[in-house]
Length: 74
Image (cartoon, rainbow, N blue to C red; front, side, top):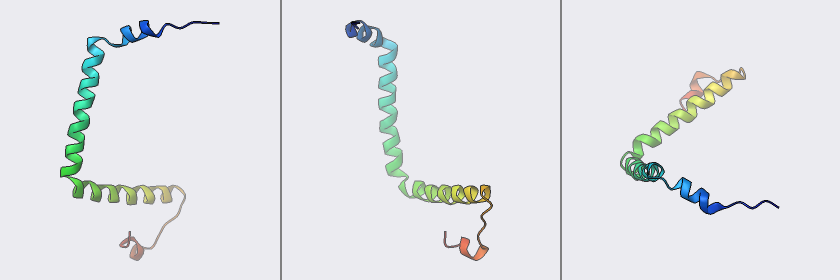
């Protein structure tokens, strides 16, 4: 049976470089949340446009086209 010493692994992982990277990620997550809260309306409209464009592109790949008059409802 093999024995793995996790305490050595932990010592190798907790280097100053790794800790700085983890701290930076944590800071950016906070900034991202502030951006999402302050720009919610813009992000929702961008999300809607992206969904429509994705659907249209997927349909074009499968040679599915819709009438122009129905596109305004999307």
